[in-house]
Structures are given as C-alpha cells and as structure tokens.
Image (cartoon, rainbow, N blue to C red; front, side):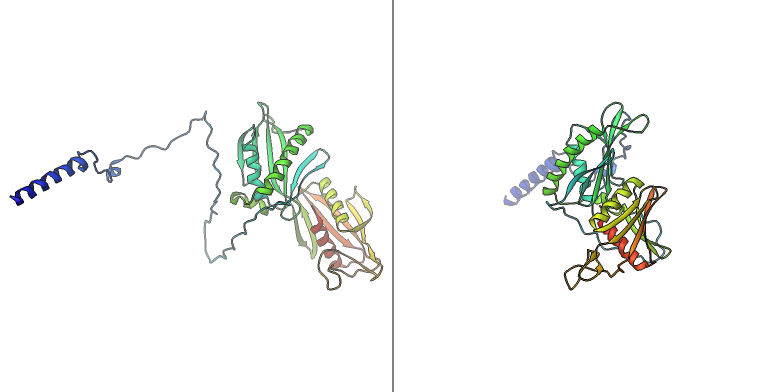
Length: 328
C-alpha cells in the first residue's frame, strides 16, 4: 500500500511539474527560443529627426599595417585641475579670447557642459577639433573653439557669431564680450570644483601654438598666430623676461634688444633657472651684447628668430629659449 501511495504521489508531482514548467505549462523554458529568431533590419533615423550626439570617450587608434615591432608609449598622466587656475579675458583689437591655465582636455568638458546647461541648443560638439556649434537664431549660429594656448599647458577659448548662409564671421563685439564675461565666471567656479579630463579631447593638448625647432643650425620659434598677435606676444614676453628693448621697427618686424647689466658682477642676467649663488641661472654676455629679434609671417605661421650682433649662436639660442618660456 505504501508503494502504491508513493507511486501515486510521484506521478502527481511529475504532472504538476509539466503543467507549471513544461513546454505547454505556465512557465515554459525559453532559453533556446533565440535560435528561431530572425535578424531584423537596422533602425534608421528619419531625416526630419536629429541623430543622437555621441561622444567617444575611449577612442581607438586606427592601426593599418604593422611590419615591425613598435614601441608602445607610456600612458598619459591624467591631469587634474586645481582651484588656483588663472582665468582671464584677453583682447587684441576686436579679437577676444578666454585664457585658462589648464590643459584643453580639462577645459573641454567644462566648455561643453556650459552650453548643455544654457538656454541654447548645441548643434554639434567635436572634441577632436575642439569646436562646439550652438543654435543662435535662424540666420546665425555661435561657434566656440577650444584651443591650446601659446603657453605650455594652457587653453584659449574663442567665441564667434557666424552667418549660416555665407559662413562668414559676423562682427558683434558687445555681444561676444558679454557672453564671454558670463563664461569666465562659470570657468572660475567650475575649475575650483572640477577634477578630470576628456580622453576624447586629448589630441587638443598636442596642438600647441608655440613650437621651437632648429633651422640650418639656428633655433627658431614657430607660432600659429598672425603677425599682429605674434608681435604683441613677443613684446610682452620680452618685458616678462626683463629683456630691454632698445628700439623696434614694426613695419620690418624687428626688435633691437639687450640685457640689463648686473653692476656687481658686470654680467647680463637671464632669469629662469637655478644657480648655486642665488637660485638664478646666469649666462655670461659681453657688455656690448645686443640682438635683433625678427618676426616674419610665412603662410599661416609666424617665425621668431634671434641674431646676435657678434654672431654668437649660443647666446641667441639662450635668448630665444627665454622668450619661449615667457610667451603667454
């Protein structure tokens, strides 16, 4: 009898399982149903709708052919901004820009967030080119450009009002200045609280406006600036480096300079490095050492060269090095 009841209970239990979890039960097994699914067509976005603005924070370098072993570079150190970063509005004629003492890859996410939280609509944001297009009205758009500055690890931000039909920049200095003044406050507040960088905008860190190279055995500074701004920048750098300008000829692009003499040591001093005496690096120049700083524009670049009157190439290189350090 016990065997009969046991068999009966087992039969009822197995029947219940099939009713609950069988193919025709309340909870059928569907783990293999995907094998019978058909591949659907890709979703297409209608032309009248905007496509999503996707920003690739983890870009992959396109490597086509590798014929030999290559050296893998070390990972870039992630830059974190600090609260004492300098933010300034600078102007040269009608040209205005915001100067920030931080890398462009750090300025980029702050710039994008400024417009994302504004009353304007962002049309396009490209971290590779550093450009953000903003819908302004039916005839115009705003374009922000995030660029590496002249100084090492600095950012310059430009804002333009562009005619949609012609693509020309519209002159509206009052509006641009007013908008940039708002942006300065935003950057100052954001940099004190923000710590991070945009991996997608890392290439902006390499697009430096000031580069130094050798040409025919002589050191040359290359500036991605027009002549007017290059002249102004070099003039300020000479003052910052305490290099005396004896005369200048802007029409020919020449500064005539010399160094202030140290009465005690009867040497010309170039501030910047370390020295065992007083923490300043000094280079010995003759008392009559004078130089010509030439600025020439070729295509879209401006080149700065130094020529010593006595033909001392080493002193000319030292002078250019100091000018390059003082550019901002």
